[in-house]
Every structure is written in structure tokens, then in C-alpha cells.
Image (cartoon, rainbow, N blue to C red):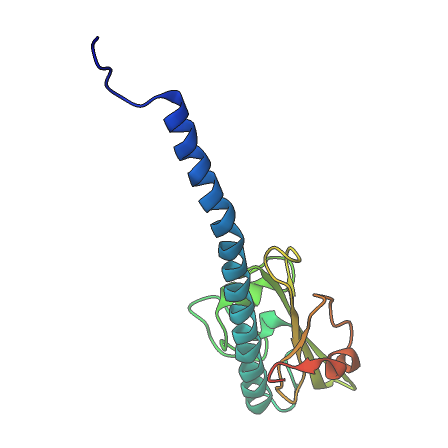
Length: 168
């Protein structure tokens, strides 16, 4: 009797089953790692936007804080003004809640009356809750980054102030 070379169908099925079991264990960990990376990036971007807002109000005290994120950016070559302060990357400035970055939507809005914006609200919300991120982040002029574990949007300045500080 001649010996056949190669693998039997049963052997191949066993190998495929083992690969599927390993993948089933690894994929959830990969997704959790991606969510964690997106959340770290979102918190960092909120901190960057805080710094940009402080720089903006220092440079343009008669205006106050920036009315929108577009006021913090500017297309290159950028000439600093109150309309385009050149403080953040224009890609981030252009997102303005309509296009995401790192799995999150970012919105920055100046708040005030009588022409001077004395407050601001920055929010970062997951594009796809439980897929791109779990926590939502916000910050106001005290520059404390806060989080909400439900991924909800901070609809107002006072709502953000009530959220838990990221350090806690």
C-alpha cells in the first residue's frame, strides 16, 4: 500500500477550529485596546483645545474665548487673527462636530453675551458608542477635563461642570 502525502480533511478542520478559538479570544481584547487608545487620544485633544482657548483669550481679550473651533485653527499658510488664530491643526479645527478624529466628535463653543465670550464648552463624544469609545469628555474654562461614562453629550456649560473629573 502506498502512503499518501498531505493532510486529511479532519486534520485541516481541527487546525481551523483552533485558529477560530484563538481569534475569538483575541478580537475582544483588540477592540478594548482600540477603545482605550481612542479615549486617551480624545482626552489629550480636549487638553490641547483647553490650552488653545487660554492662548486665544490671552491674544484677543476684547473677543474673549473662541466662538468656534474654526477660530482656533487656520489653513496654511496661516496668518494669526481672531478669525483664524493658528493655535491648533486645521484638520482638528475643521472637524467642528461633523467629522471625527480618533473615533470621537469634537465641538468647541464660546459662550457669552454683549460681544465678549467669557466662557467656553469643549465636548468629545464617541462616534460609535461602545465601538469607538465608551466615555464622553468635556471641559470648561477651569481647564479640568471631565468624563461621563454613558457617552452622553454635555449639552450645557453647567452640565459639563457636574461631570466627574478625569483625575477621579
